[in-house]
Image: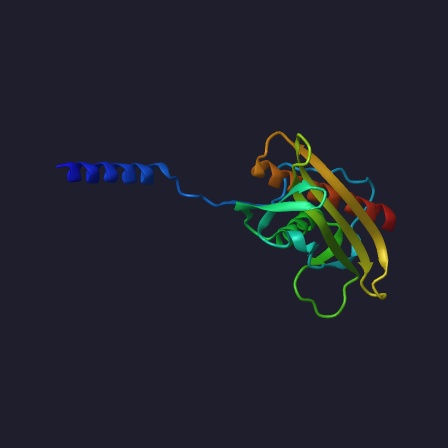
Length: 202
């Protein structure tokens, strides 16, 4: 009788333990064009007559994976275990650029895949930081990048350079808001770069 009672108690404890343990759910986040983003463009300017090739985005090695980086100290980062980018950032950033120039005709043509021959321009993008910064009491989305417009026909000389190191505060440690903030900052800086190119080349 006592043996049966002990077995029943053991079964109840094991069953209760199984019911209370929740399965770990992986969450995935996207870098996508901001909703209802409308940047201001200079008046009386037209698209550049040449074609432009979008090079692959160069991402610093610490951020070049599906893992989302968290800055915890001046030289210390960690990665979320169950929260990841759905698409690696360098691929997502290039898609943001392609979508942006499909909507905003800065160049006569924009090419992204393998090309034969040369184009008038080459756009190189380097991202050195894309992280959730938790070093202060607040949480920040941080993005540091550089756009380089190169002469595609004359030995790749630099025609225009744009650099930015941005941080946006987040109300909470919410990775959906973080992904939205990174997307917003990237698009804003791509727009600022494009305006600078137009003003320089007109």
